[in-house]
Image 1: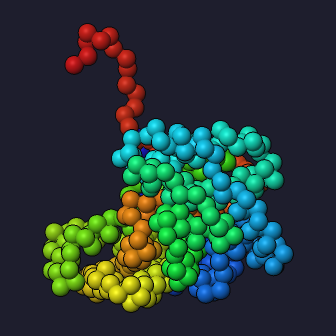
Image 2: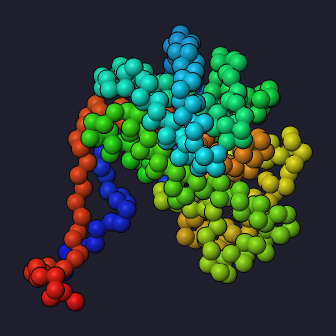
Image 3: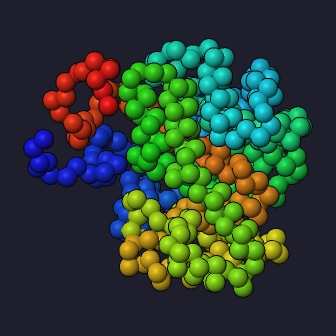
Length: 382
């Protein structure tokens, strides 16, 4: 073959594949913007439901719009019993993300608008999935423990409250609910990440919205994308105590091991989401009286950062979300499904936009294999 004229970017890095007005990232400055609003501003003043409305409609709702949105969203929280029946058939040790993908696919078979591709139907399906996925996640936690799912008792309180209430069976305090609500805002969208791209690729074939979301869930399942905060928590458990963190990290550096929760393809400054989560983790540690997990996280960062700062490697969203979720009493194995329960907002926003201005994705590749081979009878092949 002739020599290649230029080297193509690996992993589609810096290749623009679509236009969108949903999310903007400035990786050098460490800035994340949802439809013109900086993430810091939204986390200070908005709710997850307001952000959902923003990403789907391109504007924040007024009071009447938000009230109507709340009513329709929380009317959709109920999951058909048949979906729980399918979940009960699965082995109790099934990965929670695999269960979530299965359950969303089953939801599609019960959705009366499953194959209706009109904008109105896709909006309605997006709303139902946003309401139902958190309930699927907490339901699986109980089913996997041999218990029955907790019922939704107060849908008007919002998704963050109802997730924590149905997960623990106990009344969460207001600060924990607000902290979890902000965590959902932080994970709601992140431009054209792997799972969002996967959803858009599936939508580009004019497959239905449930199928596109299932594709996104299965992409997020990979440890290089959505599973890092679970890996961070495992690392913290392995370290065990704050005074062991420095030596642990130095040993990882010496053996050229990856410290989970650091680095991002886009950010060359500290992930703005990590900044907010760090503050929430510290406050939760003070309120719970258990500072070990936060102190250990901060010690890991202080030890590792000098080794990698020159390379533009800093904590990402997963690093402090691990200790934050843990101090809220959330089990490690549903950290990634929580990511999906938030990111479904961004996925569906992008999927609906893909439908509106669709062109099927068909990238090219550089062939780097043999040429001009000739077939030979099987008895003549070595």
